[in-house]
Image (cartoon, rainbow, N blue to C red; front, side, top):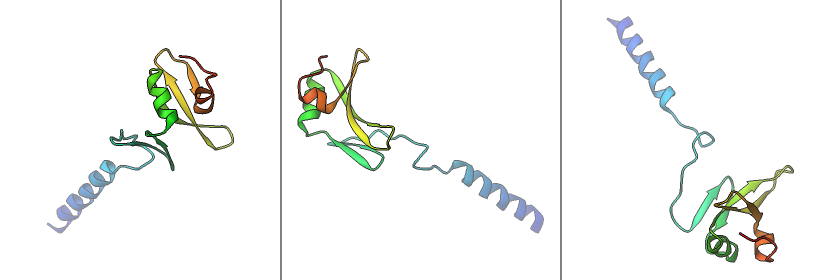
Length: 93
């Protein structure tokens, strides 16, 4: 009887461990006024977000080779522009 209880307890622990989630494995879509990306957020009230939205794109934070993150506007046609280039008018939709 006790061994059956131990087996059931061990199986329960394994099932719960398999169902656990980690922050790294899930990319959750946020609703509100900011998009959470890693430790840095892209403010959706910023002029860069407004310019990107008006151009038909989505603003996101893109990791760079040096580990920093840069705001990028991803257009519907696949083109990407940095938020700096978009704000300076160097990138067209």
